[in-house]
Image (cartoon, rainbow, N blue to C red; front, top):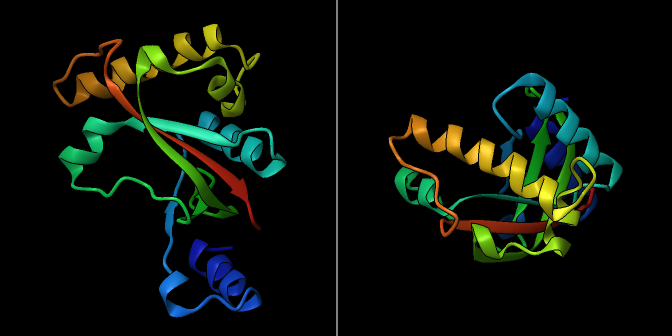
Length: 149
């Protein structure tokens, strides 16, 4: 199912007024394997949080997620997997991300050590493409969500 179809059906079933009928549609990561695996973790309710570089939001002119925002999570091929609703957003330096947040990200063994290792690798690769360097103090947009469909 296309993301637009899933969200319009959801909006109608939940009587969302026009103001609440906006949504973002996206997939995780930069490769098919990870994108599909993470979408499945969200669908199953194991992954209830994600984070991204605050700097990239600024550069790309994208708004930071807000509480109450809806997103359709896609698989790599652009098919809708589920709909999430943002329930918390915090700006946190990389080195201040908590074990609780790492657990909510739902990846690997869900430990803070695993989270730091894989996210440092991810951000180093993402930022080098943008001509920036990773820093333990880089600001992250830490978003928590719930699956609503």
